[in-house]
Length: 105
Image 1 (cartoon, rainbow, N blue to C red):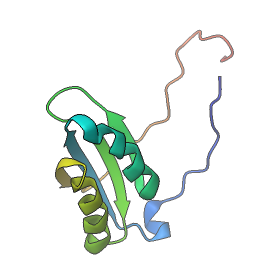
Image 2: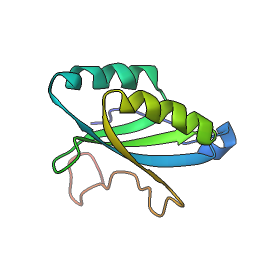
Image 3: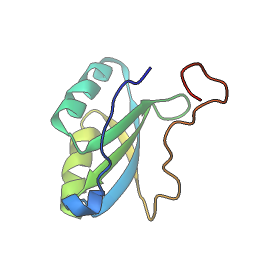
Image 4: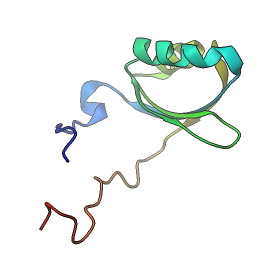
């Protein structure tokens, strides 16, 4: 089943010169506020709820360090965060199609 069809545009072409990965740990009642931050911050392009030390793993596109700081400050109001800057996207693949899957030759 196809869920969505999109065009992939280079973030740099739109002015997003920084990419960051943020791990966020959220406690108790603040879980409800995560969706509010995501709604306010469209530059958070991926959010995964995960197991382990952190509760969430987020990917952020930013125009510069001040822009990244604005977004991470908003996140830090909800939980403790650790931010890593991305040097390079090494692999960014489409979803693989399993051999023999119905509907795909």
